[in-house]
Image 1: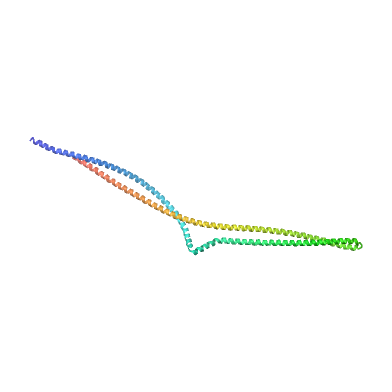
Image 2 (image 1 turned 135 degrees about the horizontal axis):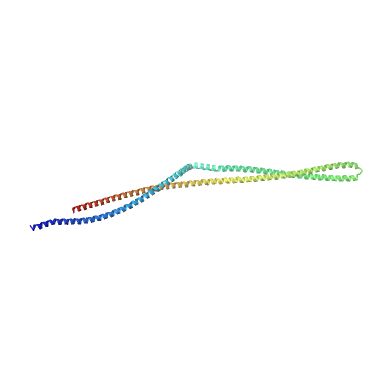
Length: 366
């Protein structure tokens, strides 16, 4: 009986030792699993910190990109407003240019036909030459009128001068002939008077008859003196007429010279006016050429502005598309990272719950 009791006690101790060993092995396994779980938990915490850091950086990047997106939207709004303003201006300029281009295209279509071109050239030349031709004809008519008046005045002056010279010569010849005749008569009278006085002295017997004859001679002498005085008065009158004619000739000459000077001044003025009209015509032709060149330059600028507007529109559309694509990419990355974080968090929660359940089971089993 004594031998069986130790055997029974030994048999009873063997299951207890096995259970203890099992417990120790289980605790050792649990300690190893707990270390692994701790390590995994640390790794997961590090990963979660990394994910949190990445999330913060992604959040900051998203905020920055949102700010940039808002700034880009504001810039796009400004660009759109500038574009609208520029388009409005371009439309106005394009309307003006289209009007001018339509007019010029019609003009060019008209000019394309050689006959119409020649007719238009002839018409333009006629329109440009018509006022000049009319003014030239007026100037020529006025010049001819002034020339006719000048020649008429010159002929009248020459005629008056010739008449005055002829009258002067005739008066001089008449005066000279009358003077010679009067001198001859006076000398005859003096000779006759001397002879009569001598005869009176020689023939004192015929005193009475000679007195009568002397009285008649004295009367005739008085008449001759009166006649001489009348002739002298006529000579003075002729001299006065000569002086008056010379004054009239000088006055006529001065009037003719004044009219000639006025005609020459009017001719110079008309020539200056003609030159001014020619210069104005040249200036108008230059202005027409400049307006054509400015129209070509404005057309080129319009095409350049249209190309610039098209380029700006393409750039705006490209920026909008790129910003939209970047925002979509950021949203997608954020969604993916958020999903990964959710998965990692769920895994960590599952592991923690598994470890908690396992530890509860172990403690409950112990």
